[in-house]
Amino acid sequence: MPSVKIDGNTLKSISNLYAREDKPSARTYRDTERPGLVINVGPRGASWKIATNNLNAVIAPFHRFGTKDIETLRLFVADALLAHRAGQKIKTMIDAFVASKDIDTAKAHHEVSIGNSMLWEDARDDYMTWAFTEYADDTAAGYKSALGASARSSYVTEFTPISGKPIHSITFLDLSAVIENFVNRGKASAALGKSNGRRQTNLTIYALKSAFKYFAQNPSKFGLAGDPSVELRTVRGVEKKDRKDKAYQEKNSSKKNRSMTSIEIGAFVHGLASVENEIARMILFLQALTGQRILDTAAALKEGFVEHEVYGLVWRLEDKTRSWRALPLGPVAAGVVRQSLEDFAKYPSTFLFPKAKPRKKTDDRNGHMHKRTAQGKMFEMRLEGGPLHGSTIDPATHDLRKAFTSVMAPRMSRFKDENGEPLDREDTKIITHRNEGRDETATAVYDKNEYLDLKYAILCNWEEYVMRCYSDYVVKLSSQQPALAA
Image (cartoon, rainbow, N blue to C red; front, side):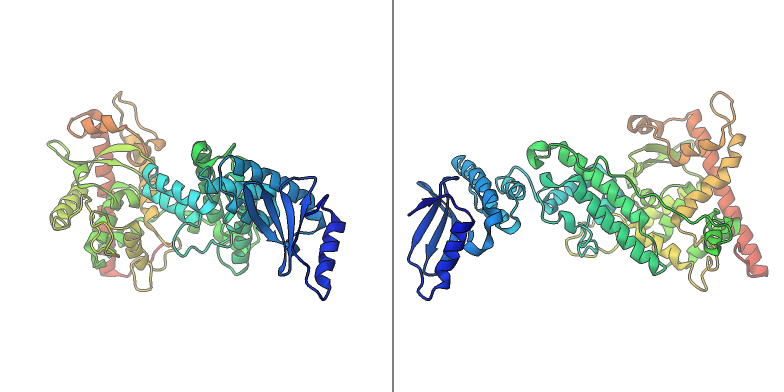
């Protein structure tokens, strides 16, 4: 059992042993530079090992490492022996080193194996569990898709730079490589005349920054010393601004960026009669009458609607941004809610618009109809023969909310606040965005106050406008087919 300074000559002499016709007898070469590093030679082959009085572990077959790897092997053996003396199993550390020939990678995987960190996929799933308890479901679902955590995700290739990596070893360069993959995917898509993927890329950036902030704030679980996502920046659109370019003209024309016209609003309300799914129909109608998000409407809780002796019915809602508002509904909207409470009472759900048919046996019946189901019914109105076919903006549910703002903003000066001052255009937010607080809204739904008076007047005015659009559309329909905005 010779003790030698293992070097290139040592490796060459061992290789020569196997070049002979007779197989070599068993022998061991112990490195004098790093006690514990040995090469075992035998008739069946040679191997690198860690061998001490209380440890005998194979590292890899002899041919896996060459002369240039010897110094790295010595450093690795030193770290492996420290871990072993600390009572830690080192198999994962050895396997990772053999695969990568990198000590930092080996140590990072070792930290995962002893419970001090997680691999990217496990850490991501841990984050998603947290996200669904902390964020609005819509936001969390978007992040889940953006991080490649959805079943049958199409983003597996894009996340290759961090796939299988211990979370605490992921660097800014790794994350930048992920984003670069998304950018290249978008370029390839744009070359085919499809979306450039910029919005998806930026959503992934937002999701990564949120996830790594969570990891960094839980060092005992993930072992991060810092947040490598801090320097990530969203991708800005670089657009051709040639006024002679037809594509530029079409994209930026008023035809593409306008709000729904009164004819389109009337056509939409008229088209609701053809929506056979009653739950989806009621969701769309209530959204149109209140100016709220489709998600907040679809997820409305039954207990959020409170009978009021003055206003009839007040909706206390918490929107996707966790903002609370109390909205006294106009008479038509209140009728939609009451009809829904009556028609859908048979469903075992705490939501006004229940999930009618669970997709899986394991699905929770106490859920609400997915917003996309309702959105799909509006998309059908854009098909040939539908009431919205031919519109230059392809109206979607967010356009209903946009219509409320565009129509009511110039009308806000008609309404006065508690001091008698006229409202300004930005005050549409008291209906669409303002956070009045959980406790304040809990009390407001039972009181009569000037603030509710104001919101009631605004919502009734909007409701009257919507129904007038519908009436005008029916009149025109009876005389001639109305042409949607060109």
